[in-house]
Amino acid sequence: MHIEPGLVAEGKIWLSYVTAAGAGAYTLKLAAEAVAQRGLVSLAARSLATTALVFCFFEVLPHHPVGVSEVHLILGSTLFLIFGVAPAAIGLAAGLAIQGVFFAPFDLPQYGMNVTTLLVPLFALASLSTRLVAPNTPYVELKYRQALALSTTYQAGIVAWVAFWAFYGHGFTVENASSIVSFGAAYMLVIIVEPLVDLAVLAAAKALSGLRGTPLFERRLYDPA
Image (cartoon, rainbow, N blue to C red; front, side):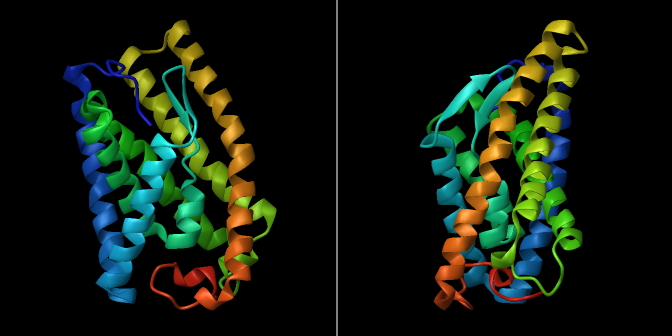
């Protein structure tokens, strides 16, 4: 996952530091709440799992440059449903950092933009889930329309942030708008695939109900809120 180098000029990239700091501070708040609820060991285990998965999403799964960025199957809603919002946020940030440090150092100047683009839609997804999923419904009982709504929220948020950075960096030109539209259209494929992945993973989790109560998974996966 990367915003193309040079999309935002060096003199304007300061804004990404501000947005990333805000996303990071909110992630720390969520992490503190997760520790209070389930303990540090549970948070650490879930965060290690999400970090490994995110790294695989970026480096192993197919990814193609389209327009102003790359199209990835990031599966943010899947991470949220299985591991919880704080581990998902930590995994996205850490996996992105590992990719940048070891495999794509040219992406590091864009890290603030990229991490904002990944995390803020995740927070929106988590907020939506509290209204979309009834308190007495565990995640393994989600319906397709609910999985679709969560996935669409996350992926649409990514497209919106990429568009914001592109317009912020290069202005409202026809060429820039065309690149953004190409990127957004390509992401429609992800919105089609991700809910199906969510339901498949949730079905597997439901079949493995003996995992209920283990510290590696989100408590809401099996139990009502």
